[in-house]
Image 1 (cartoon, helix red, strand yellow):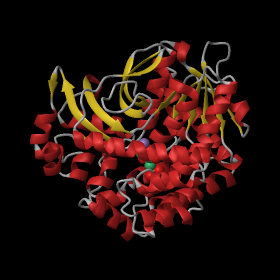
Image 2: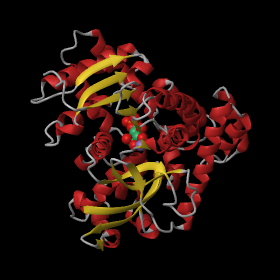
Image 3: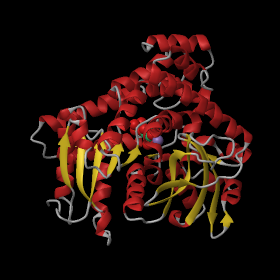
Length: 452
Ligand code: G6P
Ligand code: MN
């Protein structure tokens, strides 16, 4: 059960290594150990976190997960020293939450007090989160450039589009942002038309948490028009239930689940306001329990405690949105979390083994989406190989979609500007120009309450 040394494996460093979803990444690495090409296999996993207790708890979960695994496992090392964690890394996953879940709760509650959406990545809450996170992410990018200039950085840290763009100003195309929501949508849509999700081609365009699936091509035929015409098939999966067949037909595309906060803004806001706890409050309570239990015990049962907590987390994901759209339960196919780890691993493999793959990723546009400038990070299909991720041309984007993308990009850039030089006017622009913020005065008060 020890890592194999001496093989030309890769070293992966996870920033936010004490994070709750890290065992998913570790599980994906274990599964990959059976791949015939051992060259790109992760043999060393370095977990970095600012909180040693969280590191210890996740370390205990990984130790149990490794012990249950039959086959080679990566060596796991933990550290609270950033430069030590980064030096020698081939890949760096950044999955940090600046301010912790307490910060997430504040991002939710401050806007809600003004009647504005309080959500992790969308609306005023997402902007507050970005203002707090961008300086930290930028500093990480600078340390990577200094001590691991050849590493590829995979950014999970939210708001992922904004954070990836801020990091790209330091690291160029060596930083690639990922999200599980586009791949989840694509796979659910393919299954709904009876196709093998791995054999379909997806035409998806947008920014992170703001995108649209425009075509699902199976054997040369776009199956989306037939899916849109079939109410039963359409409403058999998450996004169909969330948006309803009539709206999807009217739109002619399948939106990312996060567009629920835009298209059903008042219902989503009302459901969040009516809930006993925000998502952040629920998770804070749930995870405090988990970390306390695991770090307080001799830590047998760490994996079981993690697994039970994870299941509950998946089952309650976007519960208010489901409440607002008819109160339905998530299906097994919607519950199939693990999107992150699948995308992250596929990306790592494609780069490390030069295994050419198509993935929907957050990268600098470089001309792929007409109407969006070259340095703007967009979330679109890319071809990935040893040379990194190259965005594929998307063709023209519908005016309503392009309009929203441009507006959100202006918001992200104002937030990056505010985060990098402390500019209050830029912070006000970031908040007040968000399409879900309906008053400059309210934006100003939210900013003030958040200490800006
Ligand atoms: C999805 C999104 C992530 C987001 C997460 C929130 O996976 O793609 O960007 O952070 O949901 O889930 P949570 O369980 O933390 O509410
Ligand atoms: Mn995401």
